[in-house]
Structures are given as C-alpha cells and as structure tokens.
Amino acid sequence: MADQNWPNLAAMFYDQVDAYGDRPFLWAKREGTYKPLSWGDVAARVTPLARGLLQTGIKPGDRVVLVSENRPAWLIADIAIMAIGAITVPAYTTNTVADHLHVLKDSGCQGRYSVQSAPGPKPDPGRGTVRHHRIRCRPLPT
Image (tube, rainbow, N blue to C red; front, side, top):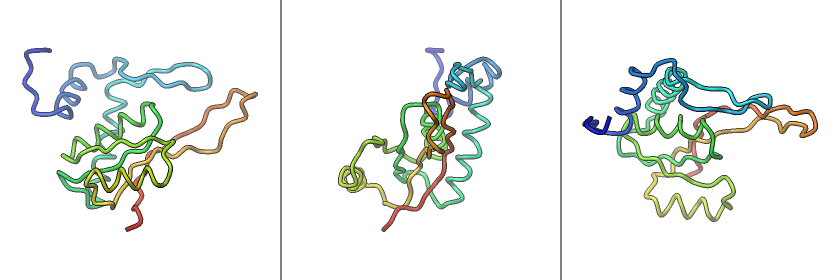
C-alpha cells in the first residue's frame, strides 16, 4: 500500500473499498455490542452524502464545518466532504456559540453550511438503549 500514488484521501478510500469490500472498516456500538460497518457499507453512506452536499451548492474548495462526536458518522461526513473537493473544518460539539463563530470566521468558511450529526432522543441509561444518529446538512445563519 505504501507504493500507491493516490491523488487524495477520498481516492484512497474508494480504492480500499474496491479491495476490501465486505471486510470490517469501522465499528459502532449498537445495543451494547460493537458491530462492524464494512468498507462497502461506509461507501454506501459516503457517496449519497457527497452527492447531497453537491446538490446544496457546496463546491470544491468550499469549507464545510463538521460538528460531531467521535464516531463513524464523523468519518463518513469527512470523507464525503473530501470526495467533492471541499475542506472539512472540524468543530467540537462542546463549543459555545462564541467558539463556533470564531471557527467559522477564522477558517474562512463561507458560513453557509454545516454538516452535523444530529442525535435522536436520549436513551434511558438504565435500559441500555442506544441513541440513533443521522447526518444532515443545515444552512447556517448568515
């Protein structure tokens, strides 16, 4: 693998999808157990998200703020952003409004879009339920 000459990380990712297909790539905890997402499973999430980002008007070179905890959804969004040639601007979920505004201004982000992993209802900790997450694009206030 070290002798490959990929033009970017997204190209490397899709090359690895072709090579590893159904083999585990990412793991996510579901119902108290870690379950794998294969390379193909992840690609099946990355590709439509990348297309959706393009449909919202994000172009190569645009900076896109990514607000998410550390989990598979973060990497899926990051690869989708890179796949269209945009630039990921990571931000902590614990940031204050002032922190987010600083990141937006300092990063050169056009301030139009954010990709955020949005949690569903919080589970009852005693029941061992899991929060469900989805990635969605939201226009930022201008």
